[in-house]
Length: 116
Image 1 (cartoon, rainbow, N blue to C red):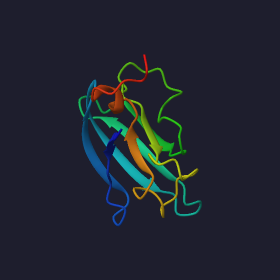
Image 2: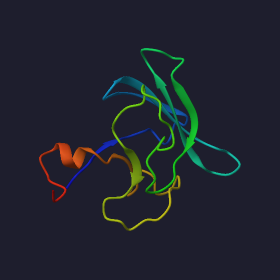
Image 3: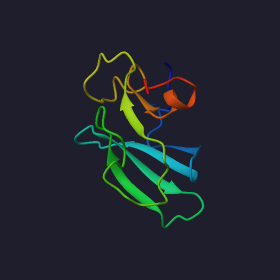
Image 4: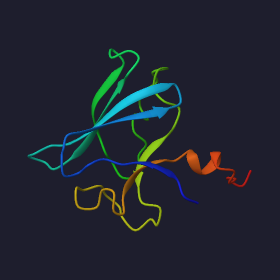
């Protein structure tokens, strides 16, 4: 069950990717805090740049913006994780190999079932 993923250029941080998600087009910017090493993501709606959340930390297995109830956010659950389940954290060394920013909903959209 392969999930869709969003990739970034880790050699050129901060790196910005424009992605099409449910609810519109968004700019996602990945950056790393120089002191702590924590990776974080900014999301900005391309259609309305007042719709933005800055500095959301990448926490392994926790959906981005899970705490936010804004109707402009994409419906997809974007989760930093590895499909093999071998990792337990997100670092610059393991991000994108094997940990990726995955669309956790895409496994169900592709025709696979969650058992229901």
